[in-house]
Image 1 (tube, rainbow, N blue to C red):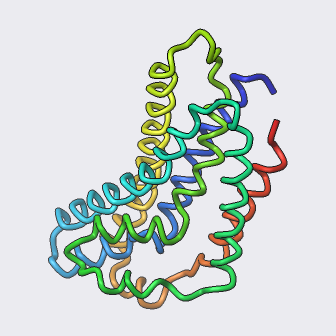
Image 2: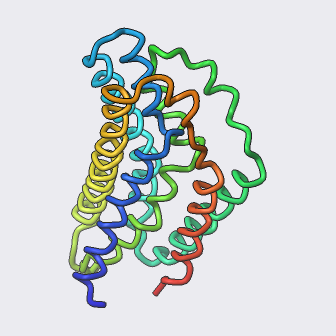
Length: 219
């Protein structure tokens, strides 16, 4: 697989991980449905989805931007990738062993969905899942540190971090929003009480899986 194919594949991973996060009810689409049903207005659904998207985007940036700064240190790039992969595996194992949701999430009022979305994304390691993929995309940038100014490299890497976070969040809110709209329009609140499906184990295993794959594909 050449560099173009590898880069394209990594960007597709960013999109599909966003779809996966959006489909997962733990990322908040049922809360958007509940808000719309309680207020009996579709506009409430869209406002709630916008808040969820904002919180998720900020959480992705909060994880990716620090790694983008570290990525400027090209000679340590592989070490950062290894550390990120092992951190992802550790978080996945922790979530497998500890199934309880953080109590502080229950203290966030429904009116602060953006804050809730930000905190839940951090608590469940959603941003960490993107780190190995993001570092892989950065590796595909052909830049000679000896001839490219550090600020130029930094700007490109930060731009990639922002692009990854935006693409991921758009895919996330599109898939979650589609499900939320369908439940709100045609299925209703009864589905949320009887049709809830729990993806906690799958989520934790996916974190471990992405970490392992990242270690196996290191150059």
